[in-house]
Structures are given as C-alpha cells and as structure tokens.
Amino acid sequence: MRRAILQRIAVGLTAAAGLGACATLAGLEDPAGSSGGATTGNGSGELTITPADVDFKTIKCGARPTTKIGIVNNTGAIAKWKAQSLDESSFGISSEAEGSVASPGTATIEIDAKTNVARELGSALLITAGNVSQEVRLKGVVEGGAIEFGPSTADLGEVRMQNGGSVEVDVVNRGNRAVDISSFDGQTADFTVSPGSMRLEPNVPKKLTVKLASGTQSALLTAAITPVVPEAHCGEPPALAARGQRINTEVTVANADFGDIDCGANGNRAVVVTNYTSGALSYTAAVAGGSPFTVQPSGTIALGNGAGVTTNIPVQLPAQSTPGLKESDLTVTITGIGPPSGGPRVVKVRANVRGMLITATPTTINDFQSDGGATDTRTFTVRNAGNRDAFLVWSISNGQWTGSAPSFLPGNSALVNAQVSFKATQAGTSTATLSASRSILPPPAATCAPLPVLNLQGTNP
Image 1: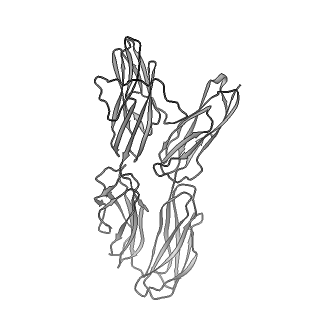
Image 2 (image 1 turned 60 degrees about the vertical axis):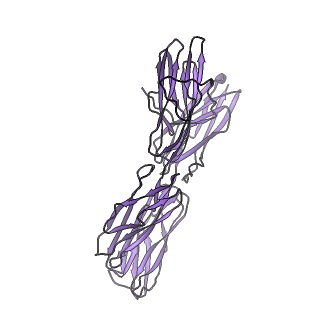
Image 3 (image 1 turned 90 degrees about the vertical axis):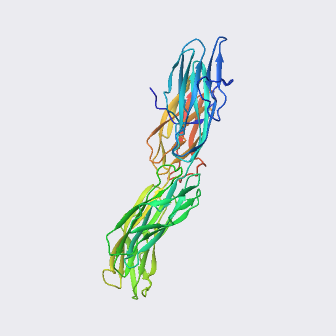
C-alpha cells in the first residue's frame, strides 16, 4: 500500500552512498536526460538501481509526464525495496512505494512531475533495495502562463444611463512563458471588453477596458468574462467579474476597488463623483465602524455644466497583516441638490490583501536527547494560512542538527508534518534554530507575518 510521504527539502542531508556503474535494464525505456545508477554484486549476480539522474526537461503546465526507475535483481535472493520522495510538492510516486523483487527479476517505480505551477522543479527520490541505496536526482522546468486580473472585479459603480461608462483593469501573465488570449467569453449586451485579444509576455501588464453600455435605468448588472487561452495555462484561466448600474440622475458615484494589494503595503484609491449639473455641490463621506479603510470626510464637488466633471474622494487602506478580502460600505452624502441625485448614497470599497502566512507549531522544542550520539527525531507542523503560494528555503544553524520541511506550500494549505533531528557529536548541551526564508524563484509572495523560526535544544549526557 502506498504510504503518504512527507514533503521535504533536504537540510544538511548527505548523498546516499553506493553510486556506481550504469546498467541497461531490459524492457525499460531509458528516460531522456537520465544517467547513472547504483550497483552491488557478489560475484554471481548483482542488484542495480538506475538511472541516477532524471531530467524531465521542459514540461507544459497541466501535463503529467511520468518516468520509470528500474530495480534489477540478479543476486539469487528476493530483495525488499522502498522509495521515498524527498519533496513531494515537485515529484510524486504514482506507483507502489515499496515492495519486493524476485531474482532474477525487475521492479519499476513510476514517478510523475507536479505541473500545476510554472517553476523549476528539483528534488530527489531515495530508493533502498536490499543493501543498495540510491538517491535519484530529479529536475525539470514547468512552463506556462498564469493570467491574473488587477483588480479581479471591474466595478463601474453607478453610470449615467444616457452615457454608459468604462473602467480599465490590468491583465498580467504571472507565468514563465508568453501566452495569447484569443478572445473573451462571457461578454453580454451590457458588458464588453477591448481589445478582444492580446499577447501577454511574462510579468508585462496590459490594459483591458471594460465597458457598460448606455441603455435604460437598471438594477445592478453583472457578468463573468473569461479569457480563452489556447496554449498551456497553469490551471483554469480566471474570470473577471464585471458589475455596474445604470441610473437616471445628474450625479453618479463610482465604487472604489483597490484590487490585489500585498500585505504590508499602503493603498490609495478614490470614490469618483461625476457631476453633470451647473450647481455648487458638496459632499460628506464616512465608512462603517470597524472598517480598515479611511476616507476624506468632506469636500466640494466640481461644477459639471452638462459635461460630466469628476471629483475624486480619496480613500486609503493602511498596511494590513491579515490576508483576505476587505470590504466596507462607504456613505457619500451629496448636498446642494435634491433626490435622486442628492442625498446619501452607499457605495462599496474593497481590497484583496494577498500574501503568505506561514506558521509552525511548536516553535520551541527543548528536550531532545542524544544518548551516546543516537538520533532523536521530533515532528512539528507547518501551514500556509495565506492566499499566495509559498516557496521556501529552510536552513539550520548547527551541524549536529538536520531538518526536513516543505519547500512549497500552496495558499490556504492544510497542516503538513515536518521533522527535525538531533544527533550529538559531542557531550553537553546543543542549541540550534531551524528557520524559513523566501525562495527567490519564482518571484516571492509578500509575507503577512515574519517567517517561522524553530528554537531547538538537546543534550548528550
């Protein structure tokens, strides 16, 4: 039965011994980019694990390429074997993870690459068969697009029914390969977008205009507009939400959408008041109690004289440390004109605060015992409670300690078990820290809180 295998990144690991000559496996296809193997013999036969290196090369997002590792047993006796993925976030074992192989006989282990995120993959598979151990090194590059809209909602708020309205959003490809949007599904008689197609290079944003057509007075109108991407895309392309309302007044008030904003960053937007009248108008503004947003409380509204002149009411979002959607009602009261143009108007302000939020439990383990140099291993848990994927590097400060923890944690992940071990090389008390840092590739997400540091202490009486 396949066992759940701990995601891990090697910290202070030594390469498995026993690297030797390469052998050709009858009936097994040698993967492109593979080489090497481990062999042991007793004069009458041998046990061989091959290849020692597998390069999946370039993989399109969404593909699930597999390769096989072979164990050939010619020792004259049945050999038990076991395989363990050192970082299952990059590569997984799609066949059984342990078993036995007769002599003469061949066992195969099937490995698949995880291709849901555009990134470089690098890990290893530790295989033990009989008295042979082999660390099979695995690598590859996942290529594809990853489209994001900023903000994720094109919120036009109120628009004058005689004119309609429009708003721009950013479209950016967060992947590592250029992609083409051939068209946009979900457009309606009310909502359309332009341009109708575009090519997106990685991390080069382009503007998309969302238009709400003129027409009759309406309730709130909505649409979900989805890009059609014929090439490799990491996951399903996201839908852009569009919303707005046609009204028959001389003063319109548009919502304020901050879109995506990183933890720790300050945000500034505006509620936009458009005045078509020639009267002297003013406003007061206030957000609901407990709101994270602040707003300029009062001001004057520029004269429109029939042309539709805009006045911006500044709204701020101070730096946030908790990821997730922030949304508040903001009441703008127009004075100097009667209803329906004047009086109180409730509009929405919203922001999607993004970042990784990594926690480790516990953060202190101080009762390790390494009697006579024995290894004492403890388990702790890690989790990403944020809404951005986390790519991590773990480091340990003392050579008597080793640790293994996940290098990739998706947003809103479940608890994942990790380990730290103490093997004393001298008598007395030893301390260490196991700490996480952000990987530089792919571009790191913002951190909503300091990354965890585990404080460790052990003794060798």
